[in-house]
Image 1 (cartoon, helix red, strand yellow):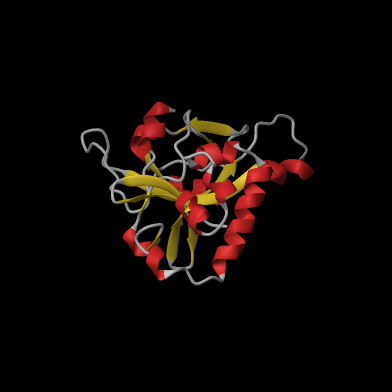
Image 2: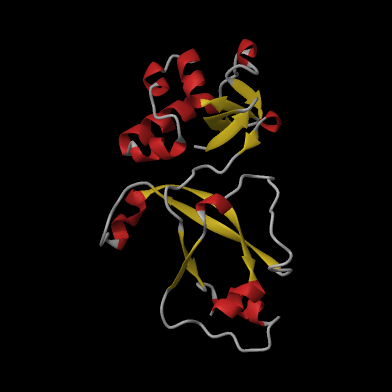
Length: 197
């Protein structure tokens, strides 16, 4: 299932991406005979918090969309070509996201190759946060102050979206807490980062 938050004609909405089409979840559910889905929360974060029962309903709806020709009269009303929408950040977390740092030795080695010191893996897990207001959507401009940094580094990251609260979860059960995955471009100001250590 591919689910996203998009902006169309100035309106933000939760949508499903099926092939080259983007279907507004709530409007599409009404037009395609799934009125129970039209009553879902208005944001993807709210839908995630609705829990696994809702996720299963969404999967079922999505499975029915993948091999279906969408009615032409719904175009630019409740579905759009993919290139006609702006992809926003999928969710806006309520708090700063926590990120695990220095977790790939090869990445450490590559990073320190530009700085004259050896790559040393940290003895403990390193965490850092990203500001909620620094999260931008696909193809949005990355804005930074050149008075603060001129060395902006990018990293492609696998982002795991946790769907439920939990603690002391057994490794064998961990996937039951995952809502889904997305990718992120994690930008860092390296010379500033080194000063902060």
